[in-house]
Length: 96
Image (cartoon, rainbow, N blue to C red):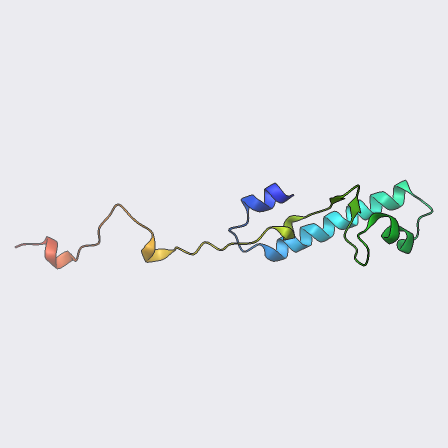
């Protein structure tokens, strides 16, 4: 997910990244509940999450999602983009 987010980090995508993280967390949590059918929410939090949070961690590996990628907006637009055409006024080109 982090590689996909790095590809799209120049877009206005922070809300989408948060939605994807939420979806991924729900999928992983539901997989844990299916695997451990007698597990309560509090027991799941105690065993599979970082203490005091709902961040899923197992053997030191944390589920880092797309929202962990910093979104950097493309800052150079319009007149600051270099073009091969030089703007010249129409009156200066017509020598009549």
